Image: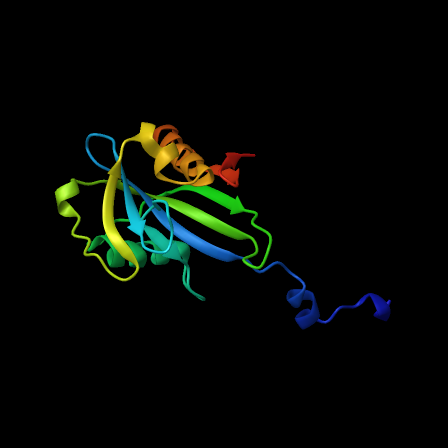
Amino acid sequence: MAEDFVAPEVYYSQLARVRQGAGALITTPDGRVVMYDVTYRDYLELPGGAVNEDEPPPVACRRECREELGVDVQVGRLLVVDHQVDGGERGNSVMFVYDGGTVEGSALQAVPTDEGRGVVFVDTRDLPVATIPRLAARIGNALSARETGDVVETVNGHRR
């Protein structure tokens, strides 16, 4: 029986470790999606970013939105949990999308930085050209979850 015992440090070292990201679905009163134009990608992102060690995803979402949009966003309920299966050196990740509510575009005071060029308001019909397919799908699922009151679980942006 002793041969079956695995020390806790060995057991935990074998479990998956994944990156986490947290973003906010924020819309304008006319239904456009608030997105952020980052300098290190050739597509738009939701406001938000990486979750730091020992930081809950909603706290990371609020922190990142403050940095990118220049305002404190009230991070509402969870809309989407997306398991990104990237493989390669980046590995897998879990992305959380929270309801960031509806704001007037003029309330956002994003200042261009080394990391981002600023805020862009995207019509939902333009999402497929504004960003990558899995993020466009994730945003579509978040919009749906906001309307239905559900939480949607996805893999690479697509419902399970």
